[in-house]
Image (cartoon, rainbow over all chains, first blue to last red; front, side, top):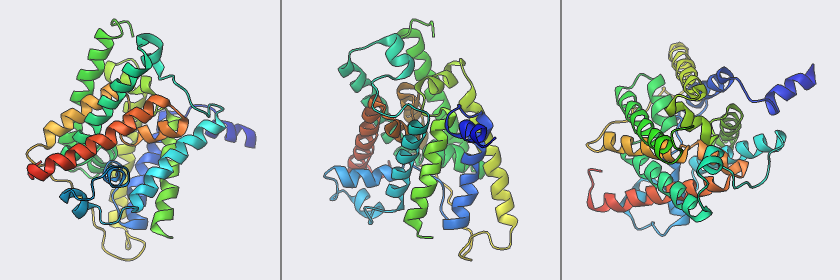
Length: 176
Length: 138
């Protein structure tokens, strides 16, 4: 009995609703405990302050007075959560695999690095221009019925639809 | 509870959940857009519905915030460039098979390409800070 429960938590892949319920509950829980909106991408401003020479930039100065704010701890927690998940499911450790990207496209490592760096750059720049990301806009904002967040989410989905299908058709030969 | 430690805990729960449900899987994100696998559409949809119900319940309780202060829901405003930025974000989402939260779970799982997405995100945020110096409307 107990081992079945532990297995379904730590080893088997979760059904969609289990993940959806927990992620959805984070929105009211963070308000209840800290009166704070769920959101990840703003914390990358803290990471800029930590890793890059950017302390003189006005935006960094005014928006991130505290370098190691709760946002850095939240980011650290998400990394830790991914690590714990991989340890218990028996997949811990570094891997160069990235699903169908490495299985089908099979680019040399350097090209793959440039590819993912470019994707990340668009995510970082785009999230700041949009004022939030999947968690802040699509989950927190949409759950609060904010029109701005619903519009941003529609644009997220349009952008993702275009790039993912371009990749599928061009780089994956349309087979995937 | 100390806010920073609390967020470390909630972050761990968030990252663990993202990883367990497959949100940190490149193929599931690509598949959500190409129609191959809609798992993550259902995850996000469930999260929005549960979050919406939870917020309605919270608003109707006597003390919505533990400390007793008034509930302050932050609403993001759209600027002139916001929807363009959202489109760029979407393109990055489809390319990298990750978003700002799930890439962190990928780091914990040890996916090396995820580190490049992560560094790209930091650089993209830095680029925004640089551009904003000259273009305050951004």
